[in-house]
Image (cartoon, rainbow, N blue to C red; front, side, top):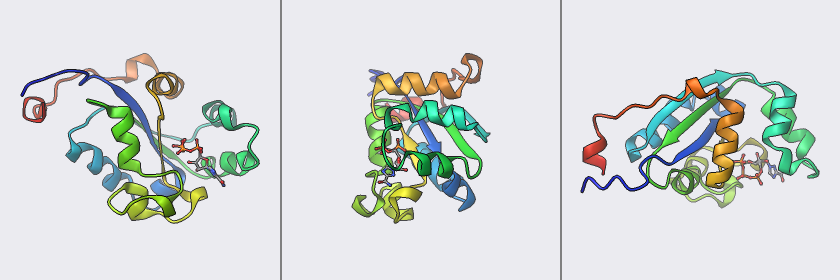
Length: 155
Ligand code: RTP
């Protein structure tokens, strides 16, 4: 009870253009909120191709890279920082597997998606990448430090 250990871990979560177009911003935010995570930053953004190429630079040699950049450029993206214990790993668990067909029902992709090229959301895969991605998508002043009224009931 009231164990704050690592309750400040942050992850970068993005709702991709298909998720925004399909009206899934609310349901996706709800999954994180009701699990007990705290929103630390949020914005709707239409990033440049250069920004997206930087975000996915590790995948630049993949055959699906041009299609991925085109998909990610096809509409606004909802970029967020979520905070809480084990936020990176549990964030990925909430999203489900990269390929929605391999995602368990109950996960976001397992409930809302079918196609790997239209998998509606992104989540950082390590604490190190979370830091990089948060720095790429947000300015320091965009990240809000606050204590949720629910905090002492969650930890
Ligand atoms: P993300 O970064 O978007 O959270 O996805 P991830 O780590 O689960 O998967 P990653 O391997 O990093 O792939 C990034 C995104 O590229 C698209 N993709 N398409 N057509 C394909 O075979 C393929 N493979 C990956 C997906 O949108 C994936 O989320």
